[in-house]
Each structure stands twice: as C-alpha cells, then as structure tokens.
Image (cartoon, rainbow, N blue to C red; front, side, top):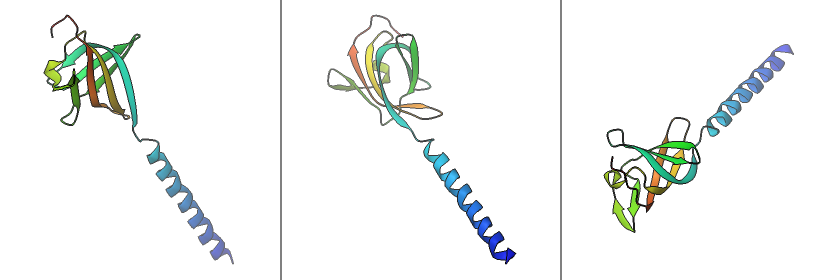
Length: 112
C-alpha cells in the first residue's frame, strides 16, 4: 500500500520540477523594442552603436542581418555618425540587444 503512494508522490514531484523548468525557460525569451534618439558612440570593431534618449543609453549590436537605412538607401554601420538621430528596432535578451533595423532620421555634425 505504501509503495504505490511513494511512486505517485515521486511522479508528481518530477512533473512539478519539469513544468517549473520549462516555464523558467519561457521567461528568458527576447522582446522586440524600439528607441528613437541620438547616436552617442559607434564601435565598428565590435559592431555596436549606442543610442541615447532622455539620459537612457542602449548599446545595440549590429549584425549582418541588420537593415541600416538612410533616406530609403541601404547603408552600413560606417555610414552612421555620432550625433545622427536614428530609430532602432532591436531584440532584447538577457545578454544582448541585437538590431533588426536602424533608420537614420537626421544627420549629426560630428565625425567618428
């Protein structure tokens, strides 16, 4: 009689821990965000740009799949200048922000 109860408790505990682990993985998912602000830093070696809006800075990685657009013309990270006003759509994860697209809205006056 005790053995079936112990087995049942064992399976219930296993099910509890497995569903808890699966739900924890779901919370690590990424979110798509958007920021419009000014470029304050560009690192072409690390392929990152820093966008500032109202004293908040976001460092965004620029990858091969990132679309960089200036006046409907496809561009690249070297076309972005410090002070440019941009709108960046990026995917936020626990470890990194990865750009989906960066649209240059206004040209800044400073060089890299």
